[in-house]
Length: 303
Image (cartoon, rainbow, N blue to C red; front, side, top):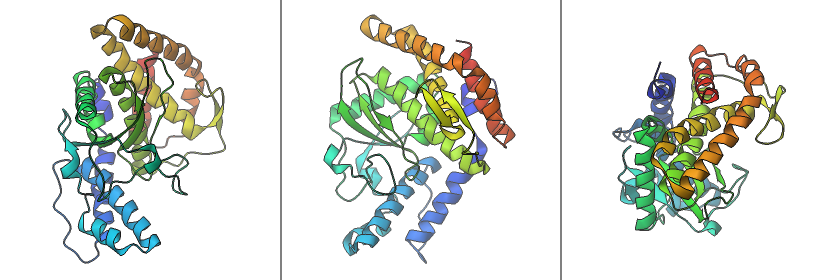
């Protein structure tokens, strides 16, 4: 596995996507003929989770109209909102922040695709498409194809501002993020959040249970974190480092200086984790997953 694409291509995740999608379709449409698989099993998997969340919320609220819509649209009717990209059709949306509720399923705001979903304005869809291309050009196409299917663009900020981005485990393949209107920076943040989705799926697919009692110092959070969060950071940030090192070759001016400063910062933070990361990897029971986490961490340390 000498290439990034080979490291990110993890067969247990593909099997998880197939199996979980089939099970979700069986739950929300019992007795019905399962929908035909799409060209991208990961997209089917992501969209099925939106349909499941929407149907469950509708059932709890006694909203029969919404419930029937989700059971009739196990792909959350994503085709009408899709944007062509280098990794396939993506759903790019930019809902008002007031449309992102909080609930017991997530500590952070989130958005579930539904009958009233509208695509993002053309300029944001174009921005996203260029960002997917930028990531694909340096080897991250497989990651974004499988783990960044729905992109929810939030606030527009300036270069250098703090950007909030996140994922939630109940909506795998969906990412929520602020942006600065630059596709190179957006690609970096897409890779970071898709990396979190990848690792969540990998842990589920391999049945790895990480001891919550074991904690490690996180230089990013400046605190002791459970092994789960520590390993996530030691995976997602190195992925962005590998991307940034390549992106720097084709950037100039303020953007180049911004990315160079980011990479320098991440180098110093990651160096602190070298010893603890080796110890944390001992908690990963699957050999293939452990190998991948170690390889990306080591490649980033070598930058």
